[in-house]
Amino acid sequence: MDFRVVTFNIHHGIGVDKELDLGRIASLLKSLDADIIGLNEVDRFFSERSAFQDQAKYLAKELQYDHVFGPAVTMEGLDGNEKRQFGNALLTRLPIIEPKNYPFDFLPKVIEDRALLEVALKTGDQTLKVFVTHLSLALFQHKKQSSFILNKVNEIKGPSIVMGDWNMTPRSRTWRRVTEQLTDVWTETHQRSSGGHTFPSRRPFRRLDYIFVNRYFNVVDCEVVTSEREISDHLPVLATLTFSGQSTEEGSSKLNLE
Image (cartoon, helix red, strand yellow):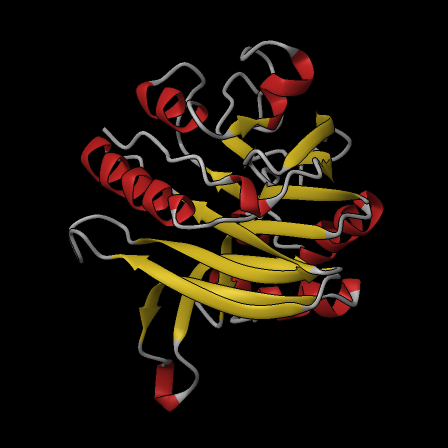
């Protein structure tokens, strides 16, 4: 079974042309025909910057997918209305079994909050765990957040995908820690850690957005989607994966968290 996975930081639907237009995001996602989509910088009734829209719900409706939203920041609503939130989201064609959200509240109110969204999906007779995240730019926070993620993934004895805006570069210390046990799909398909730049979208020179998989997957293909450079400040990453056929009974490989 081949399936397509996308990670995309949508910048609250605001393009580099300063236009708020979720319709452009929806059109691009439709064209990619992915089975699982992880999104970062998604607003839910947050502010005027996104017209107080529930962005994940809108995109899911446009694509006719199910969705889960995982807030990183939650604020009181205006005039008693819905809470104002932004964070990560997952859109999928696959049946959703169970979602969980883990706010990174190691230093609350000091630095912009981040979170990890974990969603269990049904794929045939297997359960697939998908993690969507957006890590901090602050080095201390980034280290604690990445350790938290690796510990969560380490608990899984089955197929797992981890994706999002990691705010790190290839060959960085965190990247090396992650790739000791997880596969960076770009590196796997291009046999190098260079390239794959996703930021800034018009003239990208940094690779900040990643899809990682564990040993239960083979990576068929991976590309940075460059057809629409105006609709966000990041470019999406698209990967085609297939299950490796490895049994969960063969034991779980532990991640090196030191």
